[in-house]
Image (cartoon, rainbow, N blue to C red; front, side):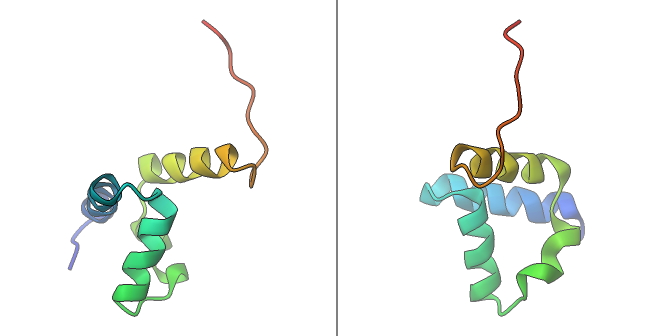
Length: 71
């Protein structure tokens, strides 16, 4: 269905924006609806989408927060 990782990631981001759900929840819902194992979509997730999911996990305290500089 998707030719590139960028197309897939943009689709997930668009769905997340429309529903107001987190990117990870949207990704898991997409996998569930299309009978896809979440492990199989790893190669389809672009770097910017991975970064957004990482930030969401940090905000939920699932990952340690990274130090930031106030510049």
